[in-house]
Image 1 (spheres, rainbow, N blue to C red):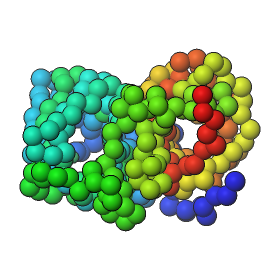
Image 2 (image 1 turned 30 degrees about the vertical axis):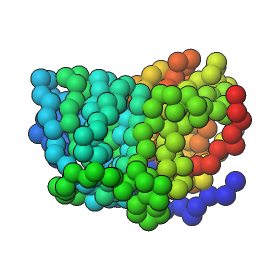
Image 3 (image 1 turned 180 degrees about the vertical axis):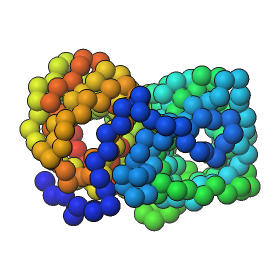
Image 4 (image 1 turned 90 degrees about the horizontal axis):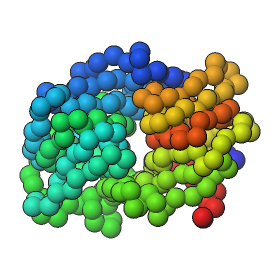
Amino acid sequence: MTSLPADPRLRLRATHKESVAPAQGRRDFLNYYDYGVTDATDGWMRLQVNEVKRGSSASTGWHIHECVGQLLLTVAGWSEISFEEGKSYRRPVGEGMFLPGNTPHNELALSDNFVGIEITLPAAIVTVPCAAPSVNPALLPDGIGDPPMRATIGTKEEQERRRYREGDFDIYDLGVAEASNNWMSAVVRTVASSVESTDWFHSQGEGQVWYGLDGSLVFDFKDAESFELRSGDCLFVPGALERRFASATKGFRALEVTVPAEVHEKLSL
Ligand SMILES: [Fe+2]
């Protein structure tokens, strides 16, 4: 396995849900929680949780974000978004979405109980209003940006279709690696039955971030304290850092995002 040279800006950051602080955000109808990834990566990546303020829902209007790419995953409730004039899409719990930078979109509504994860590269993104497109360039086969990337929605059906086994884990692939030309991969890692301690490994990517959805998984590190990732916790690991999965509960689920994309040995089920 080859690895990219270690980036000195990227540091390990393990954050339990209980220690997360509210953060400033761009919409007044959301509460924002920062998980320290911006700080640990010197602005390379940000992970935040967006939670709707009770009783509010509003359309953002058409806009783009100036960034390389943005990944979203619904954790509770639903979110409705439009990519092209007159068409909308409702994203329920468990569904993810990848938007290359500069993708026109309009966030139409959020359920009263909406909670979502948002990962952006870089951490600081600029929001710019735009016109409503009748054809969205990010949905065309050639995509936009450098490398050329397409917007994609990781529906439950799509994740099931792209499911594969890796050791003791079942991995549900959101299709982001394919859409982003291997710039980013995004999967939901789940325990197939039980997990024995894995061998030590590192990532092929520069950095990897996990967000716990259910159950727990214990990470061991050669040069740092072990960390138990539970529901609502976040872990950022520089790619070169050696780690292993020590144990996990049945029912464990976590979002796992790697930049650049990690290409897995895929064993079709
Ligand atoms: Fe947006």
